[in-house]
Length: 578
Image 1 (tube, one colour):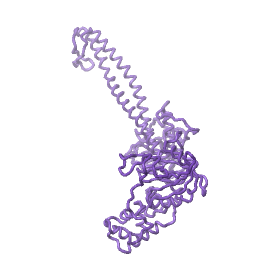
Image 2: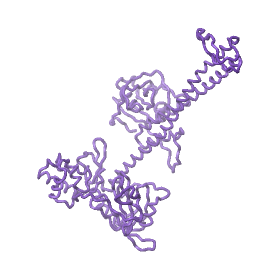
Image 3: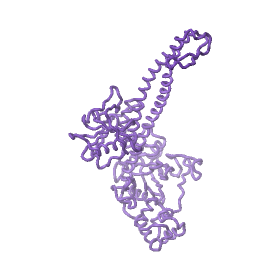
Image 4: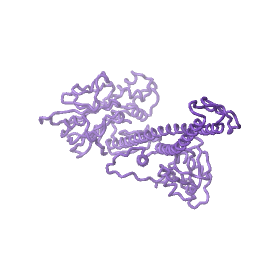
């Protein structure tokens, strides 16, 4: 993002008439690193000022988006309430073109006298901070507090004197002359590219902004390649860019990446979104970003939960398979018992083993271990008891193993659908299914309805409509209720994935190239998305059955044909909204 010192200057210029004279009515801390001030502005009336010291998303701006507050306010929030609530904002200023702003506030102290306090917001990446100072520039509190073990330059602790971040010695573009710019670039490393050299010497420019200014200068290459006229063009571009009126814009690249700035970024792309103010720009940009991050975080948490349960169940299945293998070997105990019974009088007492002819194996000699303390008859009975015990255990193991394998398949399908989920609503529906299955603990809802069901994805290819289930329940509805009996059903072979339906709609057959395309879509919406030559089975819907008691999305099918295809993502222009 390009929230650099120059952008910050434009933002504070925009905010100043709104904030000066505003009364602070209430302060909340909805995030660990962010606060919201409810203010009453002489210019705007009631509005919310959001300040954040987030490591990646630090900023301040007016906000229209509500944020949920914790039940108990954090300590920093309580300190701000004590010192700032019912106070008025006197001034707001920037440290040069650094991303450091001071908001001076006048409020009454405990005995009713007016005192001035300063709230400082420092935007410095992972070192970003919000710091409250008293009238003597002594720190009252910081949203992030640290001592000399973190920074030898300064401490952010109560009762210590505030020290501003170190200045970088760069030149302010609003005070810079053409001669000063030229000499500063020539007196330093002239092998640097023009944009990197510009950023190193001029205050308030991010790498993206420096590249933009150079592009607008129609320059390229290193400083050493520049002539007198090139320096003039660069200075003019810098001056014009710095003095330009704000046109708050989000620029979207061809790859879908987004950047914001107070002007459209010609070096980034031509696809833009414009906003009436920089605050609205920041509000919209970070709302989208926070929503996306929250979705990614919830998705990661759900998948981690399911994967832990999957791994535990997989270990259990492996152990049960080993136990079954051991139980299957129990048949040898029956053979031992029958041979001992058949050759009873040939078995001596008190021996540890005996060799008998195995009439089950062409009378080959077989060594049978014996308990010398038992009679031959008792040894035979002991082996029959062991055989019966193993047989009973085998039947129980088979039953549990089949149940656990079915559950493991279901868990794999939930994980596969979770990995393919791309929207918050879709994720909530999947989470609801996980809660119903007992894999995720259901949290108490605050007057929220359970998520509804989304329709399947729908695509068209050569006039044929292709439907794709979004999750297990969606698969069941699509295959068992929506699809016609003669429609074509597709699914990847022996791995989790979506049910795919090619709707015939009165047509007698489906062309091979349509089946091929549908198979590619089925492979894309499956665990085999990153593989090649994925097997995909297809058959008519009337050949797909759901066993009684089977979990959502689990079916059996018959008379299938298998295609081997490479997964291909459906083209966006073929999507039909439903």
